[in-house]
Image (cartoon, rainbow, N blue to C red; front, side, top):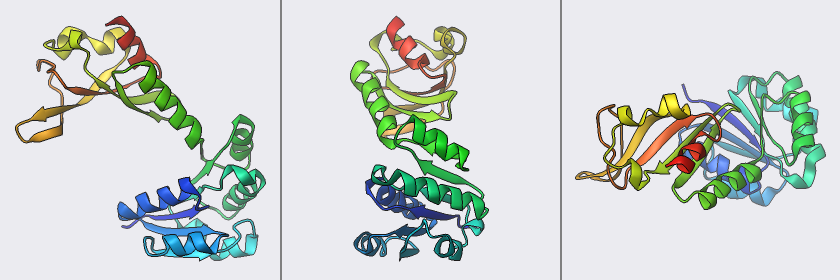
Length: 222
């Protein structure tokens, strides 16, 4: 069954999210006060409306309780509106609310008023960019909640030719290699399931899952 997602706020983050969700086949209802932004996204999503999401009656008409997810993507220029919108979504029975925060205080308030998840896109991107700049082998990093991180690293030369059994990454660093992106005869970037006795090859990109900072610990020691 097609998932239904309500996206409120069509700044850069909300607009990108609406496009990405629609591209993945989800039924997206996009909302913003700005008619121009609504008109821009309308050809992409299932439905787009120009309205004030802090108006309880208007928001109730969207029946957020019947949608799988609601994302309050209102930008940093209107923290009060994002808090009110999140609280109303909770009051209206929305099953899963994701809210955008601008700072730690804003994040705490959003959780208190009912957000199930809170994210700060600017902070998350900054942390990912910092990891890439500080450690050249890190390609990307994505948090899975507060306790786990997926990290893609370009295999350092010292790991090339060694097997996962030899490296003992789970025991030594608490890291598990869940996939390897490898250049093969079928083309670049093919994603493979790792085999314990398969030697790491030059240009391999290892997809690791572990606690925050574990991949950095690995790179510091090799």
